[in-house]
Image 1 (spheres, rainbow, N blue to C red):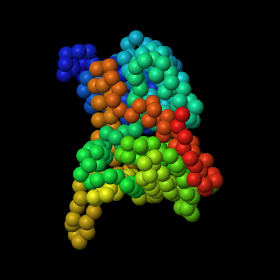
Image 2 (cartoon, rainbow, N blue to C red):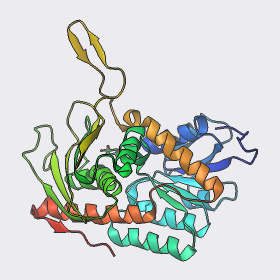
Image 3 (tube, rainbow, N blue to C red):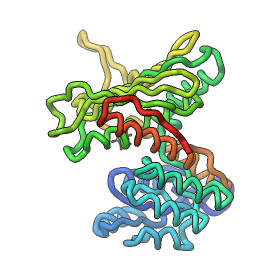
Length: 337
Ligand code: ISE
């Protein structure tokens, strides 16, 4: 955000790879809202889009080749917001150059490549990668996690999630609903329970008439946790309502719910209610800000504190099994390496 930092040390010089919807959002965040960091470079195969974005800020260089951005000595750390199928080589480049990376989910598109990243990072001897599971930084989710961890509600037994997008393009196929949307609940459940998922079933209810030809929307996923707990998730990407994400954790002595309403709740003219945000950038704005701020601060200290490559790998394995279950309708065992 600024040249002057709270501790008098140089700000973290951040490059952003991929300036589509999420990358542009992160670039703006780093440039304008994150302390102790400055946006110094962007890379995107669409040079026109990258140049237009860079022009909105001072002194931001534009790279056509993302690997050149990673190698550049003027870049200290990298936000990877490119499509998932190019994440592996970009994360590997960050590891090779010893640069901290915040990689958007999914870590990669399949379990083998995610595991290769876990192993490459381990070989390097120090953690460098944080995976973009931003819900862990959402103040409501974080408060629920602390409450569960305090033990006040007793042992966590069940989690019920609702994950609805207003709409998605018709190119968002059934498998993407698992890999790009449900993956958040995969991470949330692993994190809330503090355990791995050992089995996943993805059910196919009758689709909405708004679903694109051949797309299963909504879907209902059931996870079995290693300790015997269970979680259900409705994931509905063409709900038409707006963006709604809720999570109810049911424990032995009570339950906790997040996502009941964001923004101002109004009572007026015999009506009550509030607004439903349009998309995740609005609902999770605070979570994204905290995610990036915590990543910047940890990188400057030489640490990684958020979701790790292992978390990225584990969620990829669960989603891969989920995509199989979606095809067969049968429960799939989840086995981590
Ligand atoms: C999108 O890619 C995200 O990551 C959002 O958080 C999620 O809610 C949405 O369903 C995905 O498409």
